Image 1 (spheres, rainbow over the protein chains, first blue to last red):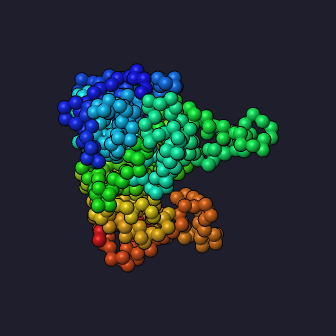
Image 2: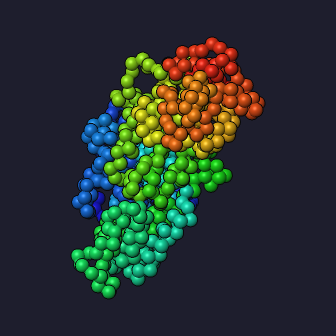
Image 3: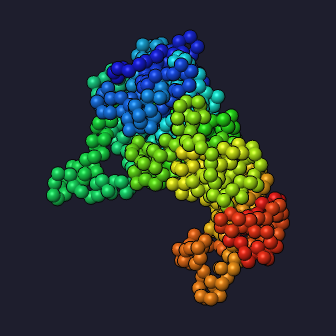
Length: 378
Length: 203
């Protein structure tokens, strides 16, 4: 459905991808971008995992929006994740809509878009696809896997599922499980999509109108959870939008309303409503400790050789410090060498995408030390 | 990462001298990681840190160390039993809320604990209090009562009492000046003379 300006690979053509649900997919297409050059020893690969509505364009211009990559601040020549030194890979997650197999793609059996016939996926299924992409690229072991938010959840599943393929791992502003509140917000978003008459049980692909209104509302709700109350107050306060007095109507009188409406309408141009349902579901299903009789530490026992770093942000109420500290403590208890800190930031959950000097210092120190330990020049 | 031989503050060197090569070491309140860095380089220990300040965490990580942001009162509970050979608590016991719990926790987590304290029984401190009638402010205890982080001051003899009350064993006792010069004296005399006391403890 979307442009595929970047690389794609067609995987699982013979043996299908078996999902946590038991369903199988074959073939599976994955859209991805790379930056930098893989060294001869194939020891300098960094896998960047994107968040719920992110994509593979971490450090290059987005083909639809024309905006710079979502982590261009960190990834590039001479930057913190230095593409003169590292080979950076970022792939669109399973179920998403920018070149990777998802509900928008044609079901090979019916030759019609999957819609709700697409199997429900998990974070670990996304990671399985990433591992297959690494096989395809000839990379056995990653120098680093790094991601924030849902990207951090993928990092955690890499540690549980393919620890032997990791040298270091960085998880930012994330959680090892979705709480009731997390699930609740996602459910509001999904219900907004499903309440849109254009959604038509997910079969809107060949019709004139898409469930844009519902998806926009979902995005508006979610966007509030990415910011802090302070950030909203600082940015907008009770400021009015291009008017001196309220209109006694339901126009976007307030700047914050106008801002959210814009966030909603811009989002629907680049995202598929069914993909949104599937990916939020995958996040809701995440509960890593549950697979280990409630002992999160046991999930990381096979990763005791992986250098880890967990970072939270003080004003993040979506995946607050507590959730991140649980992860770090579990790693510690499993003997994993891990560093953890809560960065003081007013920016809420989105802080991991923004300029946070203390986070940068921490990441820089961690990455340099990991590079030395991997035999890469400091 | 610099590769020159590490120079260590003399009082930290006294701690380092007590630690066996190759041991697993947790440094509680590791600051900028100077002691751990030294131990990793010179004694090939497997070192971890716990530190409250972001500055300290970042400085430690830049040295290639693994550090958790947290404090002795709250975060030690999360460490499994007997997961370290040594747990170091350097000049921090007097700044925690529950020194007794922390002390017990050190020897739950580690086979041995290395604890150093600033000695409130030292003659300058006593003299200061006697003469001035106000909480002493000396060179090594240089904050006033209302802005000091040190909320549970004790003397060397006080700590001996607590150690004995908890049934712990003092394997080594090294009273010293703040420049790290050892003082060879009895407990009571050390309590009079030493700026700091270093204790190597076992269960």
